[in-house]
Structures are given as structure tokens and as C-alpha cells.
Length: 488
Image 1 (spheres, helix red, strand yellow):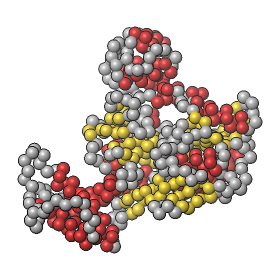
Image 2 (tube, rainbow, N blue to C red; image 1 turned 135 degrees about the vertical axis):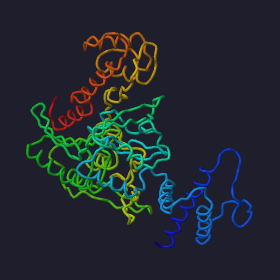
Image 3 (cartoon, one colour; image 1 turned 90 degrees about the vertical axis):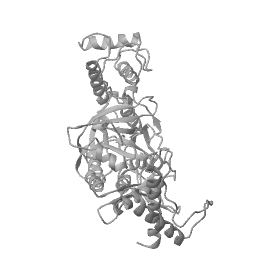
Image 4 (cartoon, rainbow, N blue to C red; image 1 turned 120 degrees about the vertical axis):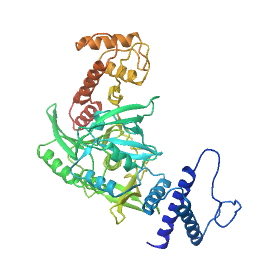
């Protein structure tokens, strides 16, 4: 380790020591603070210190912590805490430290499968935040959404936990349930979401042919960008082309991203005219362009599909389709993650996952925090976005809460008109609940019982899975057929 690197670690250790001294000291108003080493010192303004002065300052603080702190702290705790502290000062939700255990878990998650809830998470504003639930994962089925902030896990606050400490608590054996308390924008209440853990297969590419009006539309769903995703995409695309498709849909909804080289290789297969697929910018502002080698456009139209859970590599592909290929993208604005991380081993099994570059679109646009806007905006039916119904007690007329609001949206989506969707249980809502109960041969009380809520939730999940209710997919199919010269 060179002098500059040593200095960085020293500064971080100093910051951690200050944290321990201040936040773990007695807060009752009486101070038993030890006098400063070397006598009294007058407060001075911020002064730029030399490397030597910073090292001396660190050594003094470290000595104080080691000799005078109320409890013993191991050197390993201090160093690992210092590394985490350095990363926190970056205020970058995607730069994290992984100790040996969490690094092993991370490597496992890149394999053929793992057990958990199936969601990409990051640390945003000090809170563990859902970036995207994987397609058809327990997290998606439970109704978790991008930007949901996890406040508690199984009833315990996770304040102060690192990202990967929280991840280890969320993951677990297949068949067990974890209860997440989340904070969701637009909701005035915290929401408790039970998620049954399952085996999460890493099947990154799915393909099929959709036949309509005598034409064949190829559908390629990319669920994440892993090591073998580009190979699987190429194989699937060749198979679809062998069937004589008239158009191609590339669906990256719910795709949290992954390896940069995977999306570059896929872009090489679909972005024509040797256009840039992505541009990578380093800290000095120097840019490297990754240019497609494909010279001619495909002999069929291509349409992409995105949503708010399309992140990172998904956004690179979506932007390249629009700006590099001149293709349409249907759906919703993407998540807005415009940085590239690399995993750096620290020699003892621990790792840094660190943001090293920005990625820019074909045209050089920075989408970080902004996302990629589709050319054809389509929102799903409201019931696609509802909070799961998880209450135990019966909800009755004149109550008001978020669960009632979700139930109202669900009932309306199923054709039972509630008249309002603000969470107030009025007479018309009661009539809608009554009609639903009668239709499904439940005890017809008009009260929202757990039995009624469970069946209502089940009916909504079935509707969400029905392709004809997927407005984004249906719009994309119509658009690609129109571009292929087929009248509807």
C-alpha cells in the first residue's frame, strides 16, 4: 500500500473514531470527556493539512480510541468500519463494501440460482431501497416496487446496518417468509409486505413466437445481464429468425442490469450502422465509445419494452435502441442508474463494489437520476401498482387506510365500481365488496374480511399474469406489426 492509500485509510479510521466517540458517548447532559492529549487547544477554522499532519492527527485519534474508549474495539472492526465509512462519504448508493461472508453470498447470486426474494437493492439516502424486483420473483409477486425503502425486517429496524448486512437478513431458505416493512412514495403509512422466499433461477433470456394476424412476432425477455446472457440472446435470436419472424420485441422490464460487456455484445447484434452502443466516461472526463459492428439494420422492425424497474444495463440497451437504432421503445421511464461498478478484491476474501465510470447514451446523454424515456409512453392498469392486501382484522365501513385504498383499486380493476379510490370505506365501497363476495360465493357481509382480501388479491394476480391485460406488451405488438406493414 502506498503512502496516499495509507493516508486514505487513516483518514477513514479517524472519521470512524470520531463517530464512535460522539455517538456512543453518554447523551444525558453530563460530560465526562477526557481532556485533549497535549493540553488545551483553541478552536480554529478549517485548515488544509499536509499529509504528515494528517497522519499525525490520525495516530493521535487512534491512540485515544485504543487506550481510552469505554470498550475494547478490535483492529479488524476499526478497519472494516473505516472502509464502510469511506464509502458512505461518497454518497453513492451503488458503491459498497462486502466482508468475506457477504462477498461469498454475492458470488453465489451470480450463479445458476440462489434462495431469497429476487430483488436488486441499493443504499439510497441511508435506506435500503428496492431498485427492481426480478421478473416473476417472490418480490414481484408480493407487490414490491422500485424505490420502495425497507425500514424493518421481521419487525426489527435496520437503521445502522450496511446494505449487505440487510441483504443477509432478507435472504433465507426456500419456503420461509420474511416480513418487510416498507416506506413507499405517495403512501402516508408504512406498509408491511410478507414475502415467501424461493429458489431464484438465473434464467436470463426467454424467447417465444407470438402469432397474430398471420404474422410472427419474436419476443425476447432479458431478466438480467449475467455472464452468459449475450450467448443465450444470440442463440435465441437465431432460433427466432429461423422461424421467419416479421418483427422483434426486446423486453427488459424488471431487469436490474448486470454486466456491461453483456449489453455491449447484445447491442452488437441489433444496433445497426456501426453506431455507439454506449459511451463510458472516467473521472477525468475521458470517454470511450463501444461501437456496434453491425453494418445493416435487421430485415424486420424492433421495438423495446421498459418500465420503472429497468435499470443500468437495461437502460443502456433501451437508449441504444432509440438513439443508435432509431427504434421505438414502449412503456415507462426507466430507473435512472447511469454509473458502472466493478468488483475489486481486497485480498482476504472481502471486496469493494465501486463506481468507477459513468455511462452515457449513444448521443452522449447522462441518464443518472433521470432514466430513459420511452418513445411511446404506456402505463399499466392501476391495479398493477397496488400494495398487497396483508391485514388480519376485518375492515368495515367508515374506516380509512392504505389497505382499503388498494382494495378499492383492485375491485375497480375487476369491474366492481367503488366510486372512489382514496382509502375511505363508504357505502358504495361496501356495495362493491358485497357484489364481489356474492360473485365468488363468499359470506356476503360487505365487510372486507381476510378471506375476501385473499381471494381479491388472488384474482388481481391472475389478471396481472394475463397477457391481454398487459397494455405495454399489447401496444408493443401492435406497433411492431404496424411497422412491419400489417394492418390490424
